[in-house]
Image 1 (spheres, one colour):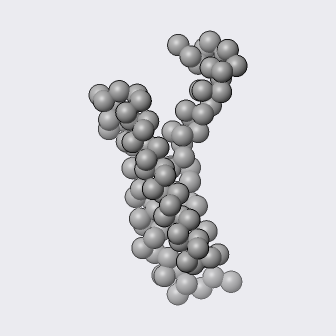
Image 2: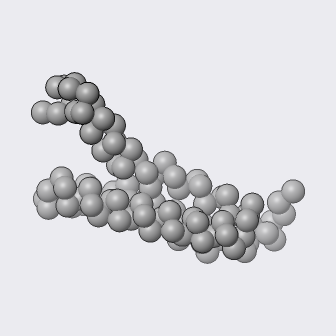
Length: 98
């Protein structure tokens, strides 16, 4: 069972994870003038940083590091959208390819 003391140890990586995940989510909107590809690359970079933080925290804290997966929907949203659109374009669904 997780105690409050064990969650305090994971607080700093959890906050870092959520900040990086939020940056991955909002970066395409903040960089909308830079173009779609550039904003997607920045979002993917933040998602990779988030994944590295989660991996290192899981290695160090084991089960207690699972709390960092709370940021997964934020960090991976644009990556999954891109994969979904690319898959639809590869299967000749014209509605998603423009």
